[in-house]
Length: 125
Image (tube, rainbow, N blue to C red; front, side, top):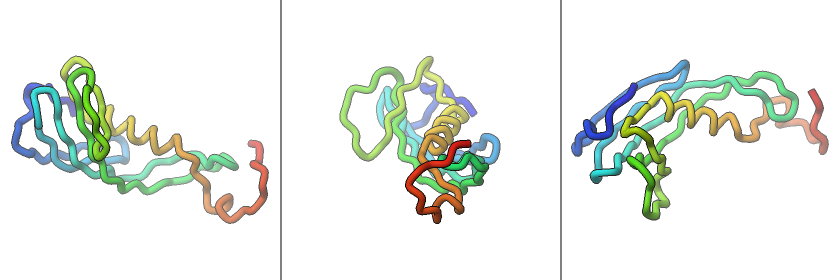
C-alpha cells in the first residue's frame, strides 16, 4: 500500500495492510507539513534461521510500532518514536513492513534446542 505524503489527513485514519504473513494495522495522521505519525501493531509470523545451529525457526511477531515519517531530512530530537526519512513524498507501507521484518531477523535468535544448550562454543553449519 502506497500513499502520497500530501494526501495524509490531519485526523487519525485507521489502516491495515499485509505483506506475506505479516500484517500492520493501526492509525496514521499528519502532525506537521513534513511529519506523519504512525501508531500500529506488527502482527504475524516469519521464518528465520537459528543464529547458532542454522535450523529454520518460525517466530511469532506481535510488536507495537511508533513511527514518525519525515518527508526529507529529519531535524529534531525524538526518543519515543522511531524516525524514518522517506523519499519522493511517497509512503510505502510494504517497505515499512519489510524493514521491520529484516530488523527482527537480524537479531540473535536461538531455537529451542540451542536455548537449553549450555556449551560455550557455537556449532558450525
